[in-house]
Image (tube, rainbow, N blue to C red; front, side, top):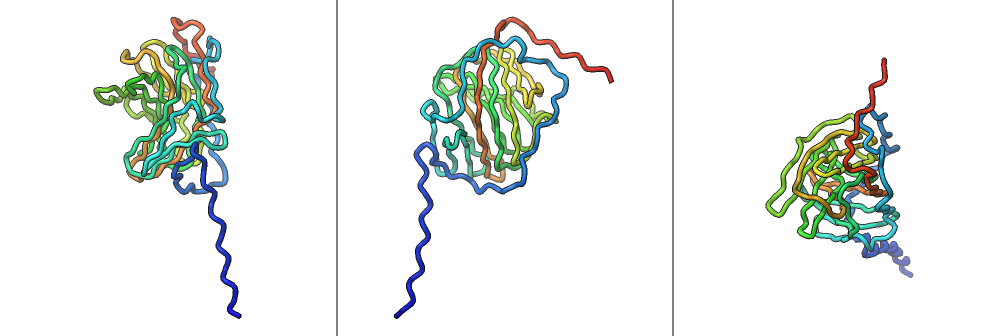
Length: 245
């Protein structure tokens, strides 16, 4: 009798609709990079008001998830992941209202695959026209604030290097966005790294965004989005004193 034909390996499970994204191959690493110690800075978190929004990414229904041949978004295992497989491509997803006007928002960013030129972060004050502010960090340890309007996009700051940003992958960064009227500030791991002033957008909802650089492969996940109001939006934070040597 002829030998029995080899058995066919079982097919990989098909991901659910909420996680249907072509994830890039993730390069394994032994450990995640730890957070740096924060330097003395203005404590923008003092005087915060009540919690306006808390999202642990266990429920995909508030998010407008989408996929394309080169990128996608999905929620799985309590995280929202953006994955891109083409050079210089943006992919973002917005959360349904509620939004906010003056607030302090924080979100965990898990960088899984990235290279120089990639960027990822939080979108705030999204309106019905798709206009918004972007607070992003780069795979190379830089940060920037930009604005997207119907008339085009504009960088509100230059790319700024900061020791507070943990570069490379895999890594974990905690992004904070402080918005008070025209004043916009980006914090990373508890340290203020960059600030701008702009009057184009006054309020709106939240979202996350990623962009692949020349290498064309990035994967980043988000978790633990918390938005708090400002107890006194008129107050201006003061810098914490530098301890004596």
